[in-house]
Length: 111
Length: 118
View 1 (tube, chains in turn brown, purple):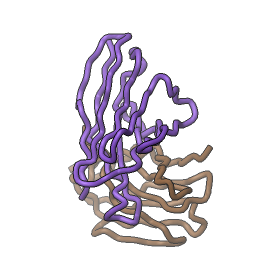
View 2 (cartoon, rainbow over the protein chains, first blue to last red):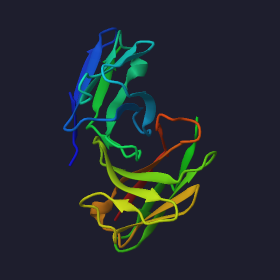
View 3 (tube, rainbow over the protein chains, first blue to last red):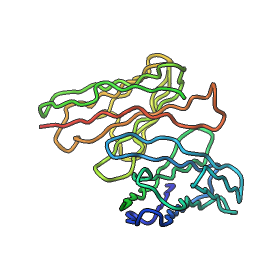
View 4 (tube, rainbow over the protein chains, first blue to last red):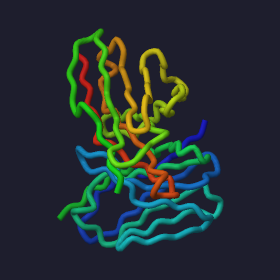
């Protein structure tokens, strides 16, 4: 079945450093979504990428969707302590709304 | 944004009992809802797709007789963990896409239910 792999599993950075998490799907995706889950909370939608090679920015966050629509990345510039949490990518290969989540990358930021 | 609620937020039960978890879309209608299970420090594992007015679609390896899903209305889906055992202890989360306001298929997640089976 479809699999979505995400690396790294954990990342510890000093406040102000950059951070990147990578996502790879075993199949071509129709879209990929990114979610953030704070400790003790539930996943919150960040963004969706649909087009091949698409790049979207949200303030310090940059999201990319690969040309083959099988990989994606999230890059955070100059991390802040408020960026702490687990970032999940989630891929969809159909229009059913069904998402397959990556394992998540847990980000810790040292002040 | 759209709001999805879950009830209860926490439940502790004895082994062998059944537990019902409710997922409600509060300000939109959801013909489809999704049920996930999340182990500590792990990802969300899709269990099943709940379809209003029809049978749920279960993912491979998920026992449909163990995890009963009922989507009785456009705003409510329930997950019943039958004859619960300690290995069923987990964090159960539901989600729903608000197709009425977003064509991007964004999922709105409930706050989750922490189930502990003694």
